[in-house]
Structure formats: C-alpha cells, structure tokens
Length: 119
Image 1 (cartoon, rainbow, N blue to C red):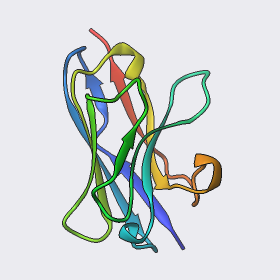
Image 2: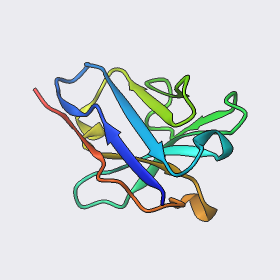
Image 3: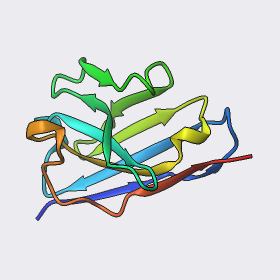
C-alpha cells in the first residue's frame, strides 16, 4: 500500500524560506514522475513542481518558477521542495504524489503539510 507523508511546513514571514519533505512508502519514487501540489483555501489542488525519473528534467508552475526547487533525496523514497521568497499567495496545504494522467495524483493523498505565509 502506497503511503505519502509530507512535512516541513509552518508559519513563515513573507520573503522567508522553507524546505518541505516527502517520504514515500510502498513505491519507489525514482520510477515515477513525481510532483508537489498545493491547495489553497477555496481553490482546487494544483501541480506546482514536477521531476522526471531521470532527475534532470523539472518543471514549475509560472507562479513559483525561480523560487521553488524540487529534488529527490539520496535515498530512494524521499523528495524535497525548497521554497524561497515566500509570498502570502503561497499559503496552502502542500502535497506530494506521483503524477498521473491529466496531472492528477496517482496515489492516495497524504495529509499534506500546511504552509502559511504571513507577517
């Protein structure tokens, strides 16, 4: 059974940084295109960053490009999202998942990690 666990969120002032972590069990993330998603209050969940199995190809939503960096850990079941220059509009619950058709999550969603950007 696939389980995804996100961590590293918190309350941060605008301009701050965070590093989110994703721990996956029941799958080998390196075999999948993996992504970080976020869901802000009242909005649909959106894909903000993705990484291909080759580890070299990454893509970002225009709203986060240049501020977010997705990477895989040295271990086979970890992934990270480094976030810099946080903005209030980055406030959301962040999730990781393998990417399926239509950019939807392939597996059952974890609980996510809350990122709140506020002064």
